[in-house]
Image 1: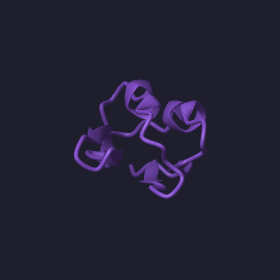
Image 2: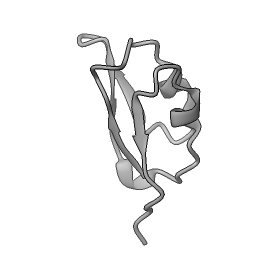
Image 3: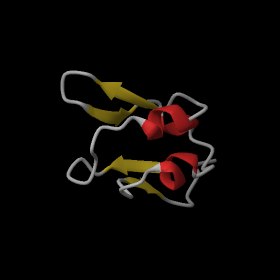
Length: 65
């Protein structure tokens, strides 16, 4: 499940937002950073994590039942 976006590592490129087919990652225009919504919808596909060039996305193998 997606756990966090490490803001210190994130450059605001929005690649993770585009990579997430479930719209779990949204973008805060004011802060210039992504944030997580509806975490429970995460299918643990790792697309957000794999696509992030700065490794700012934290995903674990855990998926609640």
